[in-house]
Length: 317
Length: 97
View 1: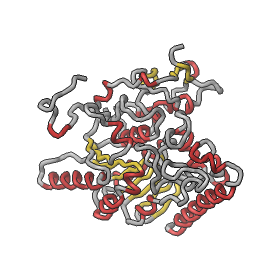
View 2: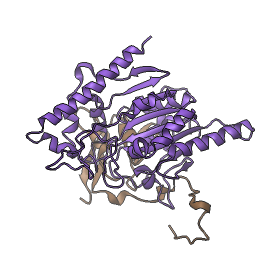
View 3: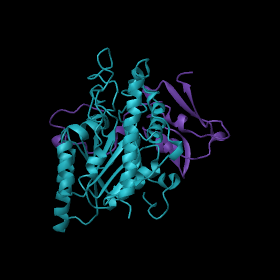
View 4: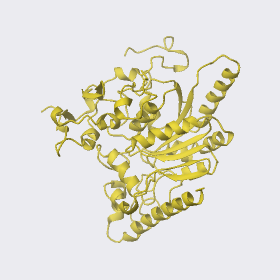
């Protein structure tokens, strides 16, 4: 079906490709993750093999005897999507060397933030350090949504989760989130980037770039979750756009040590409350007496954004 | 789908038919139903690229309607639809009306 390689990437040209994630999967209505997966798979022209960490995406797209994937797909455990993908990629390189495989293939591992930031972290770090030709994609919804909204190290400051609920003692998560994209960049990987499904063109361009490096690559993609974020089913794209416009989730890439911000809202940068307000998990932050927490959230976002701009400035040459 | 016994199960529990989730209908989850108003449609295909359920049908670069067997009625398409002159080309309506 792929006749679109030479044409510029437009939705019209992409629409000729077959969707490699079928309908009929059991992800929640309005989930951000399957939109991300569809966009990622539409960006690829070569045959691709997927390894999937345990998580919403894994359990809901592959309920035996059904699978929504139209590409080879493998799940083994929660913590080892990166190791699984490393093994598949190593076997591929060996078969190529032996002349038993001629085709060029690509390898992607998908994980949620729980399977990436926490449980799969050492496998991911190892795979990136060993330099496998694979792209690890974390769809980041900021908690263990699959098992009932437990906090993860990707959960934003102040968010209400079932393991750090907002109440009389604490106001949601008391710690800051871990910045995994920067940690991955610190592995000196070939390519690391952050993307958002609202900007499909940026996301797909990054997938293409990441796979073209033929080295270890990492992408963090913000994935709104209406169950865990306590929002409506129809606002996943809206919220991913707001996450970028408020600079909570800046779009940037790190290529060979060079940091590039792909979208700078400049004077259109919105206060982070615009992203927080529609989400029920931050409702308590808007209660009287919690103004300081909102200020702190804004301060964290501003700090990260300013340091990102400095990194871009410093790596210019 | 017919239940399989252990002798009939594929080795290691693999699923050999790619994308067979398509045979499973999730349309019954829906409480709101998207309705396409063709005269307001500018064929931007935003509904198609943002649909989480691969339920927007496109043929020859044009949106042709919804796959109601799989659409869960989330309403992302209606939300993102720019429409024409302020009139949306996708509206959500209560199911069964």
